[in-house]
Amino acid sequence: MKSFCPLLVSLCVAVRILAADTHSPETLSLGALAPDFKLAGVDGKKYSLKDFKKANVLVVVFTCNHCPTAQYYEERLKRIVNDYKKKGVALVTISPNDPKSVRLDELGYTDLSDSFAEMKIRAKHKEFNFPYLYDGDKEEVSRAYGPVATPHAFVFDKERKLRYVGRVDDSERPEFVKTQDLRDAIDALLESPARQRIRQNTACKLLGDLVRAVPDGVS
Image (cartoon, rainbow, N blue to C red):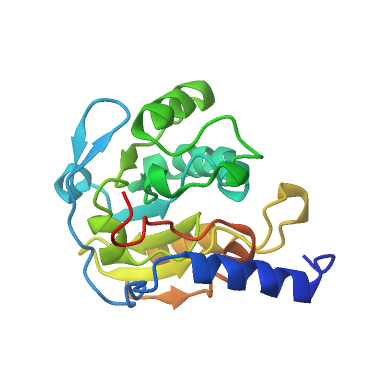
């Protein structure tokens, strides 16, 4: 992370913010109840909160196909599913991006964009072991949760109150990871359901793609 030029990073973030929807929703606050949803998954099923009612902890991660940072985290999310599924933890991912908002110059690190059809291709190729849901048409769920980048994690307790929101860890490069923020939050919640934490999504915001929506009036 220290190798990045602060000015260059700031400029990149500023450009993306200016290009994004100016009416960005606020990120869900700690203690808030999980907004319900009914979204289509790449496996052909429809998912809502009730489909995860048996889970003691529910992890909702907003991610997408085309973001190179999100791609780095796919294998880590798969390992989290395998490591915690016997502990009553469920993980679901949601793609928040309207595919029509992705510019051609943003596809330099991927062979797939963010359409539902392309999500199915990526999930099959990467052998996702978690539900991968599409919210790109209306983005209502994404606006209710308020992710600012991909990936952006939300962790809910048994009552579906938000106990952690933020990044997965502190580096997109696995070899440089020092802080396992998402795993630490899950462990803390399993140990003490009343605990809650927030980790600013700084690294994700700088490296990931901001949630993209088509501006009003543009088709």
